[in-house]
Amino acid sequence: MPKYLTQSSLTPEGVKGTLKDGGTARRAAIERLAESLGMRLEAFYYAFGEDDVYAILDAPDNATTAAYSMTVSAAGTSRVKTVVLITPEEMDEVSKKRAEYRAPGA
Image (cartoon, rainbow, N blue to C red; front, side, top):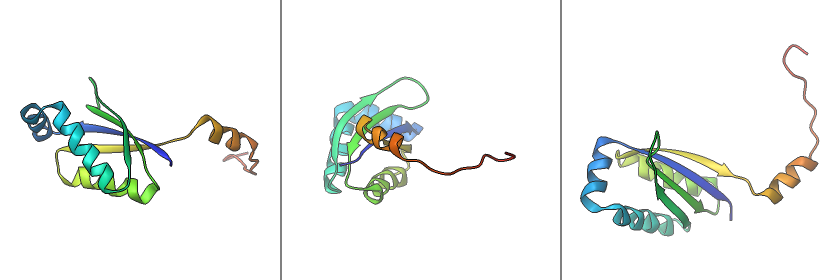
């Protein structure tokens, strides 16, 4: 299954909820959400900086991952960014593809 990295920035309400419920309760909630969509939560971490939560998910497709991200965002407690991850083997396939392209102004 394709892998996705989600980066979430908590709103003040999201921070309050996390402090109230605890970090493992939030991870469990995200794991239940992922499983309800046929996804698997591979990793879940809190962090310092611009983003507060990082998760790596296995998902069947982009539409499923979009449903996950939109569900979390709709709750209003965080802003979610999603990155499609590419394996080294997929990058090998990319390196073998040849495309025609003319740069602007060339």
